[in-house]
Length: 420
Image (tube, rainbow, N blue to C red; front, side, top):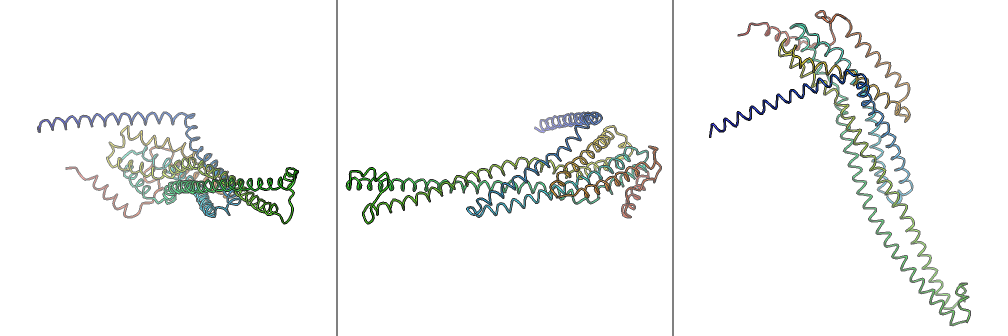
């Protein structure tokens, strides 16, 4: 039995090793293919356009949002007195619309912040890893990466929570409004059924009175038919009483018909509102998911930096491994298109927000000036020494705190000790 279990375990281990090897090969093939695509300028332009497209989508959805809000306001203005709770739904919808605009503004800020982070990641940290020549370079890179990883960037984290929350709130609103409109629809249908029945009963009663009046006229004169058609009656006779009763019932019938006539536009308005709001949800789902991914750029940079740092702790042999260098090269190759795509997203969405009055042209101009200064500073910072074999201690991009310096000093001392 034990021998059988051992054989099974051995077979399982061989399978796991084979699967692991296959996964590694597939991963390596994927990395090489991605590098090839990122070396093709046509494909790179397409990747940048994919990111920019999110700005186009966001602008289009913002316009849809505004249209739905305007339609909602018109419906409440026209029928709000009939459905008082509908006004509360409008207030809630306006609140969601305001959140949407605030999130769009925040997404531009995060896109700008991520552009700066990616420029530093590319021009400083990844470049530094690819130019490690000795132990001192390697340990410096570990320290710099650790300091970079520990940086605080609150807006991306806030944004990563904001978009899923907004998506859930919109879904909840659409579901509740749909339920409310369905209930109103049932009530309106029932009211219409009752009104139609009442109108039918009144019509029958009026018909009975009309016939009674006609018979009475025929009994009074041979020209009774003419008089019936003309509606002539004599005061202080049963005919006059029947006429008054008939007129009262006919007035009541007209009132009921007016009520019924008002129900149809209400039903149409509610049906339109249900469709109008419901049609927007798939688009908000899509853009919330896309912009949530935008918020994860910093988290992705942190994860990659952490993995690179841990790999570098494996010594100089780890630094020269082909797979590791390809991972770093892939990260570096991807940052350029992503930066340009985020810049295009910010510009595309910025134009829409200027048109809607949520941003000014002056604000956009100042943003561009500030971003240009920062990008230029990072570029000059990274190009201080043209020689790839950089002088030790030349870079000062990350300030190490005393505790980090002391810990690294101990790590370096430990690495210099003879191995047992």
